[in-house]
Length: 419
Image 1 (spheres, one colour):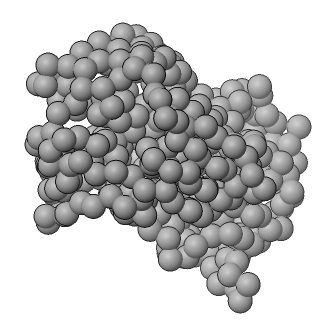
Image 2 (tube, helix red, strand yellow; image 1 turned 60 degrees about the horizontal axis):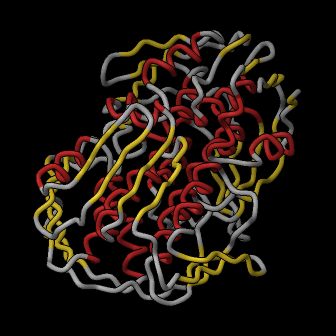
């Protein structure tokens, strides 16, 4: 599917969809409980990644839509052999692998070749050390055997999802365990989200400094009534649209959230946009003129890099995104692919292995480009149409469905002209 987006003025309001990161985690925690849980809000149409996790946990629980919520009813009997299609969801795969092995289930994970080319050696090394099967193919992974408690070493600079996966799994084991994080943990706010959710499900852990988490064994997940937060990662696209093209009011967001991508508000403020916290708890982002360049550490906010690139493409000066090496292992190689996608429409971007330099131009030229099948690049290119001289045509915009079923409709509702 290709999309053509015309330069547009932006004005309106958006209710931000539920957090993808929160939804993944609460689906898993509630499915591991012995009693029913209620998750709110819930809608039938959800992003493709959440649908993957929802289908996966249906092996452990029956899922029932009730009013505006989802009732998760744990099954009495779980099959000891499973096939799980994770499609392109790296979060689903990395969170589920240790849980499957903690439960002693033999499982074949299937999905895209791109997904299984992303880093997974942290788990592979642990599973091999414990004598468990870990057979990785081009588009599948077979795991079998039961995970044992112990010390689990995890490199902090690859993905926080490995830490989160172990946090879900280790309480189910017979003995106590430790997660030992080697080096500085990047994307730390996502681990904080996991810790928050497992605490709500009665799971106890003990943090020892910044690099060791002791997880007690023989624990049981309790049922939870949980309200999913709205998604700051998704809000970033509409906040950027307001800063570039007019004015947008964002509804449903928790300004005290521990979601790391809440940082978009500070970034927009420092770049020169107007940020207003309204009495009805909405947040208004308004254009004040051409934005200013700045240096931004993206180690804890890798998912913001694409929309920051859109913001910086017409900012005054050179924006530097640093500590960006992990971007190479996202849905696409987000360092080289951001450069390619945006330079095709008139941006001036240079990159290294760890940095992205964006020299702002007065206006983007527009034209044909590609998202490299990356949903966040696709949505960022759509937002960039606001500061383009001519139409932007994205040739693989279907990737947007990975995280959002209604981005296009919502973008139209605030003034975007999409054909």
